Length: 113
Image 1 (cartoon, rainbow, N blue to C red):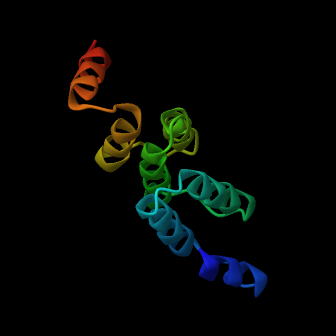
Image 2: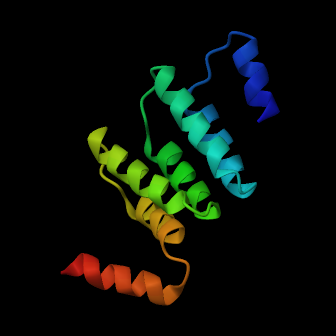
């Protein structure tokens, strides 16, 4: 993340791959708020939202106590951006929303109805 800060300070405009990688590192570091900050920065830079970035941020949200709400918002945002959530996106969302396997199964059953 320090490298990403340096990129911004040097007036180099990071691309989608750089921001997606940074969001993925936030997931590994259990820093969902920083991942969301990267997502917002991505949007303000005028870059297109892609599957990798959204999935990385959604996955990072699994670390936060209320991260599942943000993860749900991001999933909806993907649809609004014209992206159809894929298996990776849904899996990341379920990790954020469901603390246990039984909760995940209950959610899947409710989604099928």
